[in-house]
Length: 448
View 1: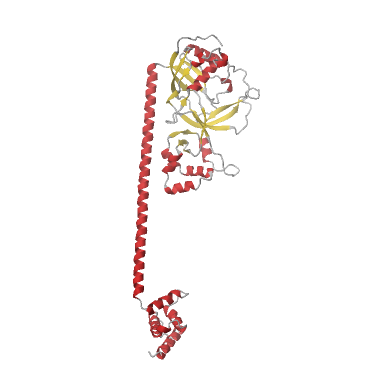
View 2 (view 1 turned 135 degrees about the vertical axis):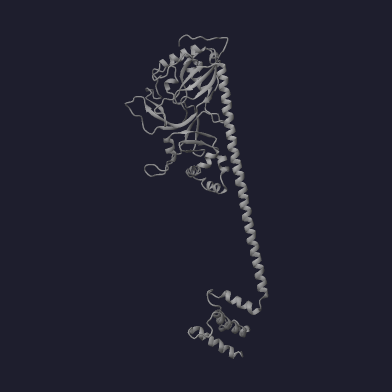
């Protein structure tokens, strides 16, 4: 390590702007799962599952509950209800066509159901505003390597402990979702296929601000970074008068996380042969991790912080308005459901009232009937063929002796029924005419 200036007594304080030169991914160990996002028209929408469930109608809740035993069916349910998910989303970003196509995919080439759960690796963000953050620890880790101030490299840890780096806060730009694909460093060779990850990255030209306090001065940090990059291949960006270039985050390349980048070996003690590149709709085979850091004035730094505060305030206002609309929608749906329930209850009560009225009228009607009329109703009701004419039913009952106590009344009733049915005294209707003659005979024999 070449000679650098270290102020043993004072800490230098710098206000800095960080610009991403290539995609940046700060690993969190967490993933988006297709139960907390939907993708539509190449746009990713993240949402809260509990809020999603609350926003469903009672009917859709029952449909959702019925799918709880099958994870893939749950995912399909979210896809089918993406409009509901979009309405309650608390985070949105661009997504590549390839990610969208994979999300839409239901069957593989062999016809089998696609079981890819499409987990997407997240980059580091503020959990409240979902704005990208580059943690101070990521920047400090890079500087520890460049300045070779790991505890084992120095006699005392005071220098490293007094390298204080704040989190870098987003001023402009943001994140998108694409694919990290493994590629062979030798363009003549092809790495194993199928080794890729869907990944969230901070896209190029996103701007952040942060601060560094250190016993190193800015020029010495720049000098050491220039030396560090000169020892490595693929160092493709140049420093300026007030800036230096660095590389941070996941997939930045193993040669950038060790002191000596000239002969980097993998875990098998062989030269590193492959690396990951980023692919999206606008970027192809982009290296990960390149950033530019430059000095800014105190006034510029304060203005950036004010802009961040404004953007965060706007985010919460927008989110509050969206939640307000959701609450109003839920309240309206609740009122409508209550009105429907009341309407249904009224219909049930009206039906019960009509039924009770009908039953009362029937009881009154039955109470007004004579014993003979009651007997006739009983015989008609019990007759096997409900389509048979009443004259036939009563006549057969007479023949079987079921109406002996009402014999004459029954004969007169048969005659009245036959006249009403227009079959009394009709020679052309032989069976009916025979019955007519029989009834006449029976009436005469009974003294009528």
